[in-house]
Length: 309
Image (cartoon, rainbow, N blue to C red; front, side, top):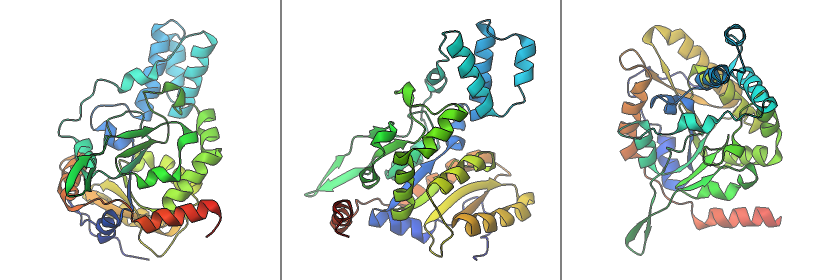
């Protein structure tokens, strides 16, 4: 088991991430911690706003609102959706994720990297800018968004500039995974399990925006993707810690490595809090060059589908 690297404001970019980009094998997995830096709601914020909207509609009184306040967010959203449906009202959750701008945010650096992105976020600010060099010319690749689970195909992992919205996206509200029932059914779906299995089997994955608050969903994804502890370094997660949390960081570094084969890259939160991720990725992005996977990889996938390998 490897020793936890020192906590730094800008940690070393792993060589494995650089090489994966060059080999066409890098995928970024983006969580709510990234969108929250732009003022977009977290799960708990979204749930509370949904409940407050029901109170304004007259479907909850203040006493009921207060009693629901202390439930965990998925239960709150489940109850909110149930109440809205029973009263033939729409929660319009997609509206809470609109009218935000990328600016110089963490999204700009992620988009500059240009590799395929998988995200549990509903917003559509992820727009990887991949430049495809052909015959000496460079052509920007248009962003492709995949929100429907039946379209979660392994081939999309080899298409830079693609964003797979694992929990659905605001442009397709019917795909948004919101309630506890949605969540459980979604991760038991064969399309989702197969996609996550292919992702972790074939790609080097860097998780961004999954802090301690998002640990539950991160671990759920890793389990559904059948990720096991391995000796190779192909899964990394950026997480922020205060310097005083050094023991916690070291313990979680061991836990994730032993349990899931995931290597925690800790950055210091003392001065910029989670916004330090923006500075960190701005420094990393120019060093990550993205190429398409070689043709041999495509042939291997075709053979696998045809049952020849």
